Each structure stands twice: as C-alpha cells, then as structure tokens.
Length: 254
Image (cartoon, rainbow, N blue to C red):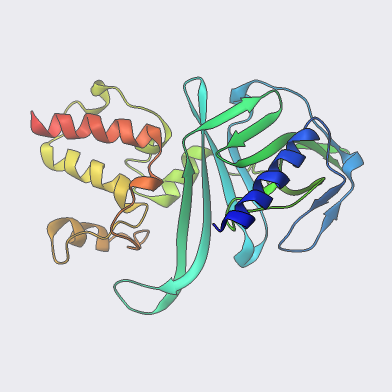
C-alpha cells in the first residue's frame, strides 16, 4: 500500500475508534446500497462465546462471510468471499472461493480489532425482532477505511453454524480440524495414510496446488469442493489448524 494511502487508512481507522462506543450515523450494505436507521441498533458488552459465529455481508456475487472462531480465551477471524477466475483443471471460468485469515484478534468491550481493521458488535431491531449484527468501519477485502462515522452492516447467520460452514468447505469427515484444537486421542486408530489425508485436507480447503499427477492431487481432484488456486496457503491457516497440523505431522513420524 502506498505511504500516503496507508496514512489515510490509519487516520480513518483512528477516527472511527474515537466514536467506537456509539452507533455510527451512516450504516449501509455496500453491495446493495441499502441504508439503515442507527436508532434501530444498540451495542452492549457480552461474553466472547456469544460473539462467535457467522456474520453475512452483501448479496449475490458481492456477498461474503465474516467467521469468528473461538480458540480458548481468544478469537480468530476468517473472511470468505469469491471472485471469477479460471478453474485449474478444466481451464474454464468459474467462481473461486477466497479467504483472509486474522489470528491476532482482540476484543475490548463491544469492540473488535483484527490487524488494522476494526468493528463494533451490535444488536439490530427490525419488525420487533432483535438479531445480532457486526458493524465494520473498514473493508477488509479491499483494504480500505469507510471514513468517519460510517460502517457496513453484517447480520448474524442463525441458519448456519460454524461447524456446518467448514463441513461445506472441505471433507465432512475432517471439518473439526478447522473448528477446534484436537488432542492426540482424536487421532487414535488412524493409519499413516489417513493422517496424511487429514493433514492435506486442511491445505486443500484453501486451494493448495498439489504435485501434478500425484496421489494426493488425484484424491482431492475427485472432491467437488476442491478448487486449486495457489502453491502456498500458509497465510490462510488459523492457529487452530496450524496446531492440528503439527500434531498430525508428529504422529506421522512415529
């Protein structure tokens, strides 16, 4: 990011932080252009486990999900969105799932900070029904600030759990490798081949490109959810997944 743009981003983020205890005046859905009445929102401090879950932003091709994972006493943020691109195998244009991972997340009261981005947990009242919401002061996909007293509204997804989300993203047998740090007894009875597949399933859900023609590529090529995108996905891994990979790799060597 150019220096001038970076300074403007930081200034915008700091300005937003000054009004963090209040609901912003300008609330919107950037994709649809819909606006909200700030009087329909309130913000209260709650326990961390009440904040975890899926918050949905945008609509149609502009929609994306903000996932909050609980990792012990801390939180992890993953942002999943999509772009049009070329399928690695068929060479045809297709919808490609993309991910950004933030392992350093802090919560102060009803405020959330992840790297240089920030947001505010809130409750939204519509038609006498109150739902959880997340107000983001910055666009973490496009890497920009919304400016003073403005935020995009994301609604809590009550219809889909974090577990179901990761079941959809990869092999339903191994989704728990992304949702919780597993102890060794979780892997009891697994063969080295099974352990190898478990470890590589974590990489595959982020679109890791495996060795062409190899056993692992053939295995995942048969999975309808696998879409190879890049040769290095280490920046996508959550701390949960990294710890599970370490455990699996150690067991593979025994």
